[in-house]
Length: 141
Image (tube, rainbow, N blue to C red; front, side, top):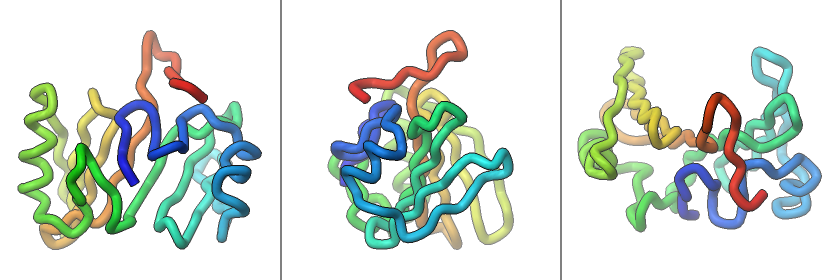
C-alpha cells in the first residue's frame, strides 16, 4: 500500500465517487459521518477510512495499516522522529506540530499529509489531494 502524494493510495485515486470506490474495494465494513454529515467509508481489512467530500468525491484517506509505505518505507510502527526526519527531507517539507498528550500530530500542509503518533510511535497516516487556487486537484480520477 503505497501513498502517492496528491494522487491516492495504490490504485485508489482521489476524486473517485463512492460507487467507483466500492467497485474497487467492495462494500465498507462501516459508514460513519463527519461533523458536516459527509460519509466516511471504513474498511477494516485495510485499516483505512476514506473520506468523501460534498461532491461525493474521495478527498482524504486515514490509514493505520502496517503495510502502508511512504516512498518505499513502512512507516506505521516506526519512531515518530525517524518518520518526521524522512518526510522533512522531501522537498524540505515543513510541518506544524500539535501535542494532545499521548497523541501527537505532525501536519505537512504542502504534502497534504498528517502523521499521528502515540507515545512516540507512528500509528496513523492521513493524506489528501492537492489544491490549486482553493480548488481540489483530482489526478486520474
